[in-house]
Image 1 (cartoon, rainbow, N blue to C red):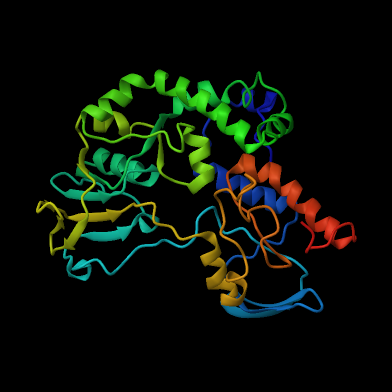
Image 2: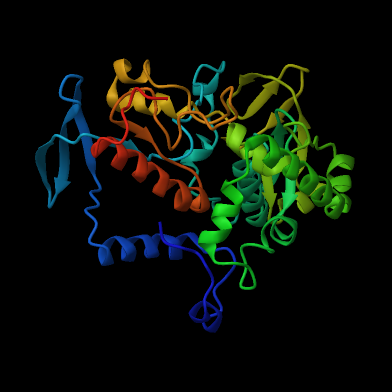
Length: 371
C-alpha cells in the first residue's frame, strides 16, 4: 500500500489531514497504473475449485470488457480475499410490514447515496448510531430534514480532534518518525499490553471530550468505552463497529437538533411510519437502517467460494485464545486461501507479513499445517 508519510511536497501543497474520498480513489487509480498492476473491474468469479493434492486452485473469471464477456481460467496456488473489513449487510427484510412502506426511501446504509436536496418538511428515521448512522444524520440535517436516530445500544464517541491530538499526532505527523517505524511501533505491542495502553489513552480522551460527552448524555444518548474501558482502537479490532469518530453530528445531538429514540425494538414498519415495542410511532418519509448488522467476512467467502471453503475457515476479526486477531493476515484454516483487510495503517504493515508467509510456503521454509 502507498505510504501516507507527510513530506516536503505534501507540506508545500498543504495536503489535508483527512484525504477526501475522491482524491484517495484517484490516487489508487494512479498507483495501479504506475505500478502496472492488473486491476480487473466488472469481473465475476465462477466455479472456483481447489485441488488438495496439487495444492492449486482452478478459477474461472468472467470479465465484462468493451461490451463483451471475456472468460479466462487461472490456476493460482493462492487466493487472497480483500473485499473489505466487513461482510455482507445483515439487513433483514423480515421486519413486519417492511414491504408496505410507501415513503420516499427505505434502504440499508450501504445503499445510501446521499440526502436529497431541499428536504425541509421531510422526516427521516435512522436506525443505528455508529459512524454510518451519524454521517447520514448530519447529511440529512444539513439538507433540511427533521432527523430522528434510533439508538439500539450504547456507542463509543470520540472527536476527530481528540483522536488526532492524543492518539495519533505524536507518531503520525510531520514531526513524528518515518511511517514505517511508526507502524512497527504500533503493531509490535502484545495484545494485553496494547489494551493497557489503550485504556490509559481512553481515560485521557474521555476527559478531553468531557463537555461534548456530557451534552450527549443530557440529550439521552448512551455512551460506552468498551471493551473494558479500552476505547476506540480495541473496539475496532474486536468488532469493527460500535463507535463514532465525531465530525459534527454529536454537537447536533447535544443541541437536540437531531433527536434520539432509545433502545426500543421495532415492531412494524407502516406505510408512512415506524412502530416500536413501547407503543410509540415515528412518522417517516425515509427510513435508513444503519445498524452494525454486517455478517462475518467468512460469509462473503461462502458467497464467492462456496460452503466447503467457508465451513473450513475460521471467523474473522476479534481475538482468539492467544490474543491474536482471528483469521486475518494469517492462515485462514484453508490452504491457499487468505483474508486481508483493515485500514491503510494495518494494510501497510500486514501486507508484508502476509507476503512473507506465502513466500515461506512457496520456497519450502514452512508448511501450511505447521502452527
